[in-house]
Image (cartoon, rainbow, N blue to C red; front, top):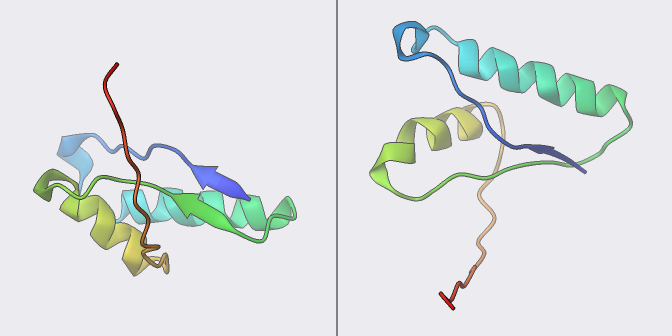
Length: 72
């Protein structure tokens, strides 16, 4: 399994398909390396909406999960 950890595009260059191109490049690299699953993670807050849209646009599907944290 491959993981796309962080995708960032300079705000001056956003909206030009760069984020999608970076993801597609990473997915091709993973597939060539023999991986059969790719994972990417982002937040559910409104500030992450563009990222979620991009991930879904390139074919990722939301996997419902509950992740719990406790401050110690």
